[in-house]
Structure formats: structure tokens, C-alpha cells
Length: 114
Length: 114
Image 1 (cartoon, rainbow over the protein chains, first blue to last red):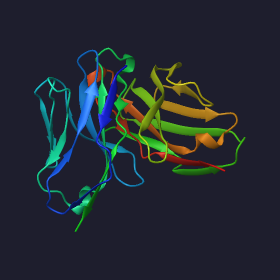
Image 2: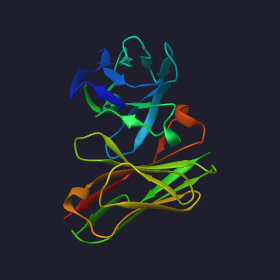
Image 3: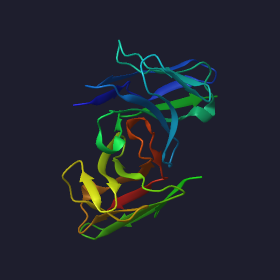
Image 4: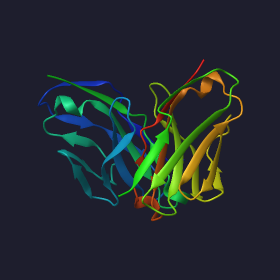
């Protein structure tokens, strides 16, 4: 079945460091790909998305490119801030999924130190 | 604009007691609705989704049930809670445009079964 695999956390960085969180997926069709962020004690917020190969999603300095050849959707940010500390989830939605439900990775916790 | 409300925010219940968590969406019609569970330190597991009133799909066998009595209301229930039902429960909605529509999450309910 379809699945999403993320790099294990926690990831600890100093402020202004470069961030990469790896995400790879397995899907039989042509999925849409998403990154969500969860701040402590809150629900998930959509961070960015990409709906077809080579699309680049971007928001708040974060970027991710849909790479069909490597089945990847890695999240990057050039300079992280303390306020970026959160759990990040990669997710996919298959076109044939009834109701468009999402399949999530296990999440990667990011901690940014000042 | 659309908003989603979940309540209560936190809940402590004894084993064997009933459960009712409610979720409502405002500002949109005929949304897809979802219940996810996030166990401590783990990813998100889809429990139920609904594409219309009275239409419920269950993703995993469990001690829980869901109902959709109105277009924008989604209820998660249990007759008798188990310790393993503890977790963070998230309601979400999306518009009926298929896989490319992102999910929008509520702030969640943290359930502790004692």
C-alpha cells in the first residue's frame, strides 16, 4: 500500500542553520504531496504542497520539490529560527483515494536553539 | 472564511466510560470530514472519514465509532473506553475536489484514559 517515510528525529539545530528533513514515498499512482507543521499542543497546519512532478511548494521560507524519479519531497529552509521548532509531517494523497484522505509519515521533531 | 471547531480541548476519562467528541465546520458546504488519532510520540492514524451525511468509512477496526448527523458535524464516540484509546484526536475537513485539496485541521482533543 501507499506509505510515507520521514527521517527520524529529533533534529536539533542552531538558529540560522540550514534545514533538511527527508521524506520519501511509495505510491501506485500520481499522488499530491504535502508538508504539515504541528506546534506544541496544537493541530496541524498546512505548510506547503505540490500536486505534480517537478512542482516546488514554498511558504514562510520553507521549500520542497516533488521529485518523481526519486519519489521524494524533502523539506528545506535556508535559515531556521527558534519559532520554527515544531513537528513536521510529510503526507500524500492518492488521486484515486475516495474522499482524498491523507497518508502521513511519522513526523520529525525539530528543535532550534538560540 | 472557513473555520473548524473541536471540543473539548482536553478530557480525562476512566476506563469503561463512554466518549463523545464533537467537531463542526463553518463557512463551507458538503465537506469531506476526517478523524485522525495521534498516539504519544507517533504519527497520525486515520480512523474515519465521511463524504456526506450518514456516510462513514472506517479505516481500522477499533473500539470507536463515528457519526455525521448533519452536513458540517462529525462526532467520534465510544461506548466503553480502553486505556489504549488515549491520544490526541484531530478532526479535519477538505472540499470535495479530490486528492489535491489539502486537509484543514482543528486544534485537537487530548484524551487521557485512566
